Length: 388
Image (cartoon, rainbow, N blue to C red; front, top):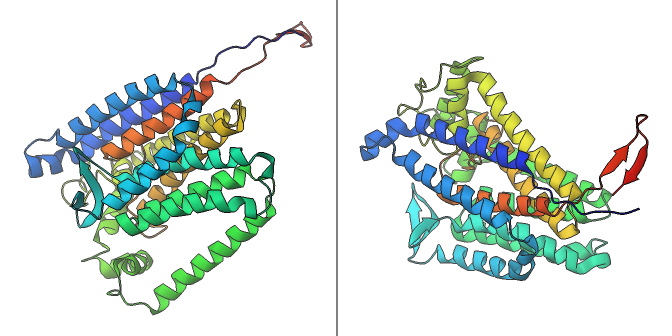
């Protein structure tokens, strides 16, 4: 039986990337035009910056996807060290504070180094697992990749004071390890114990803590009863819920949101999904979720059919990143969890986020190019008569 290798490229993933990016730019302009006009005298301020970065990032992603992803094998350690070093520099004079949060670094351009840590997890953790080979079994084998992810998460939390990003980084690490490890039961037990401890901790904080203890405890108290803190920390989430409720089934129409006219703070960032639902209704919100589900399906397909474990685990890390960030962002907007500051991928405003998301997509597309299929010829009864 003769086999012939055939190249594959996931154009479906490219299409959904373009759809989400285009939709994100439309919603960003609709959401931010009023605020941009008031603050900067230019209603295109946020849109133009995001559009330029998005277009350049898409072109860069397509070009990088033509390269062999195995090149990352050689630079995984460098990306890991660079991410740690850049996050540490946030505490130096090079660090920049925005809205009271010191999470940005200015080295010619301003960016969030914690976003690079997500790339480091996606590249380095699979590398460590693949290098172990058949030795990757038992709990002890998980310690090194778990430590690598935990170290990145700790730096994100300690140096950039970004707990939500630290949680995503650590969970991405855990998902990659879970998928690669031959045993399942220990991870399910650990996840159950961890969830129970977190739930108990949240309950204790809600029951006994006071609102002035810290801003994280305040977020938990606000989450439980936002109306009580309507004039303070609960203001943003209440306005987001008003936007969701007023949208109805099909929304007020694109551009017709009232909450974006100064009522909802930073609507173009982590609360943009509420404006989507206000202007396009539940229908528009479901459409966005379906687009993300289709993107995750394409990533799952690539990970499942990747030619080697390294490519499969990297795409698994990308899958974990996108799914976690989408779920957490939407849960925050719906007030199902305390506010975290996590943005909605491809839609919320943020140049660093868009650029690094596109780099992740370039890795997934590069892996897709290495997928090989066996072609078959069948007779009228559906039986295989020739395979090549």
